Image 1 (cartoon, one colour):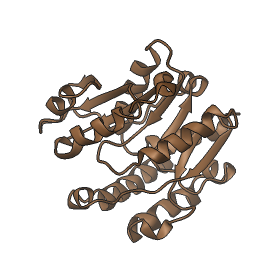
Image 2 (cartoon, helix red, strand yellow):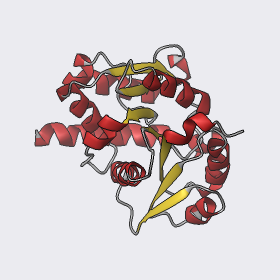
Image 3 (spheres, one colour):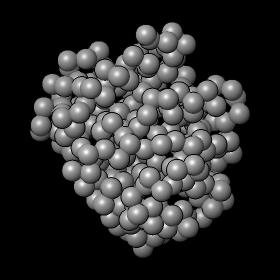
Length: 230
């Protein structure tokens, strides 16, 4: 049953070649959050058709620009919708849990935070694959903003942004380093940031795609480029 309280919430889902699971993820998510925008980032596997079989909105990049660019496009689209006050960034591969997104949204609605981040390292860190755990801990250690904000998980894609943050944020890094860019932005800002414990489903599907290893390598690579450039 759709929760009418969530009519002021928009879920932003970057999509790149997730046709195998995408329709199921969208139908489950739509049952809780009726407003979803998917940003197809140049998929060539039927992801677009999967979105069109649901009530989710669709915005398309003609070529693959990267997750950061897809998030920026999705947030811009969502902000333009009437009544939009809260914005949830959510992965397309089924790793994020709707109950975690709802708990984070309640923190944002309470007025105690301007932006809520999910953390994998509060209650059940052992569920995170070892290599990715090491990478994510390293990213936080290397991030002055992450240390300033006392974050434990700087690269979790599950976030809840309030309207003022969404209006102010501009993501300019297209690849995986957009998460580090967001943390750096928050470290310079006066926004109140809260972490909320979440669990990630490291599914057979995601493991078969090698996402944990690949994303970990991408994070370290983008972070090293960012540090050399700075």
